[in-house]
Image 1: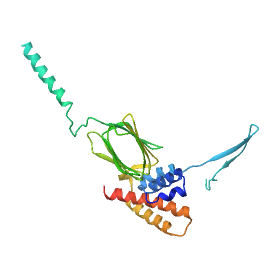
Image 2: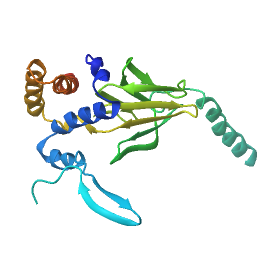
Image 3: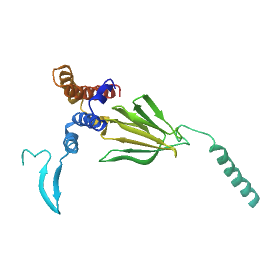
Image 4: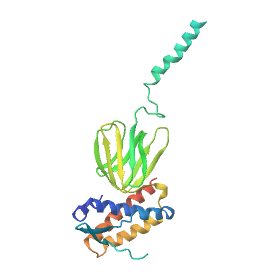
Amino acid sequence: MSSVTWRNVFTYNKYTQIAARAVRQSLKESERVTAEKRGLTALRYQQWENGQGGQQVHLNPPQEK
Amino acid sequence: MSALRLVSSAARRAPKVFTSGRRGYAEAADKIKLSLVLPHQSIFTSTEVVQVNISAATGDMGILANHVPSIEPLRPGVVEVIEPGSASKKWFVSGGFATVHPNNSLTINAVEAAPLEDFSPEAIRANLQEALKVAAGSGSEEDKMEARIEADVYEALQHALGSK
């Protein structure tokens, strides 16, 4: 772990996700497609007030589809 | 006649008492229960194995049965599992934790792991060059740190695949 200084910049979660992404990108073509899907995270949230749900908002709006 | 049969059966039974104390390499008497789990897949679930070699942050270690309880963060590296009676199998894990519990069981939690055969050396080489370029470039501190972490993973992968 020559880059032990990542603790100044990242949380452990982010560090682990970066390392996992690097491993996924190094797989053979056949395995890579299923692996890349695992790296995808999407979040949708909704504000509730007086029992009424507000607009559902995507954290990162999906570009296509 | 029956006395002779009794004697011969007793003689057959006696050697078994001695063989249980002898340890051969084919079946080691002591095994540790390994659970190697990823978020999306359980590679091992409480499977009895003889030895597990991990690359911990503090150095490479081999874990045998009845290891002292400890928690070790893992470097991106190879986990080698030696099951009773079969050759060792290797996986490259992206990082995580190895926990030895007091009840002779070992849990390894990792985010990503794959057998060494599933990796492509060309992809690793290309990714490494890309990451080194970004790490030496003029981006933000975060981008460069991210690239350095990735470069470390790729270098560990190359080392694992090279010295198979």
